[in-house]
Length: 171
Figure 1 (cartoon, helix red, strand yellow):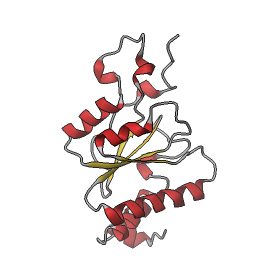
Figure 2 (cartoon, helix red, strand yellow):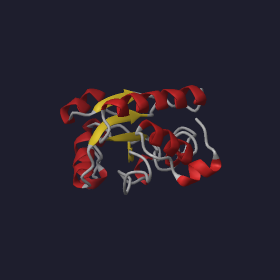
Figure 3 (tube, one colour):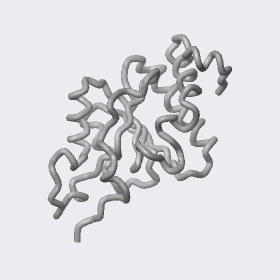
Figure 4 (tube, one colour):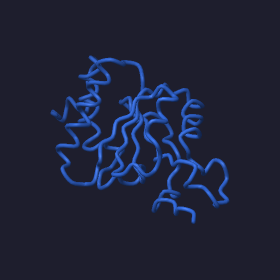
């Protein structure tokens, strides 16, 4: 028996149009391993596997260095596959609870990564990335986007955005 695709998964496009402005984040829908597509007559562009995802990301000339997985499960794909592409993998089970703890873990992961890799991009995904991520808007990256921009500016030793300065956003 074939697996049903995750609820609402097909509604969303595979990857974001670009890196989130003012950040080094690139959103994409959760890739699925090949077993999810057995018995489904879908065009290749709708079968988002890790391989297909990397083809799309490379076509946009994005230097992906890390993936932060916000799903609550490991059932979608084998995370060790990222090693094939020299991409680091981190899992944050974002179930809509413990939001402050998850946010702090997210910031810690980002800060540690950018202390080593200043020029690479972090990919972020959940099953329904472009609508909600278990109760969060990815577009606001687990909080206000301006707060995240300020954090990234501090992490990357660059200037925070004007709106972040004006609003006095703090971490």
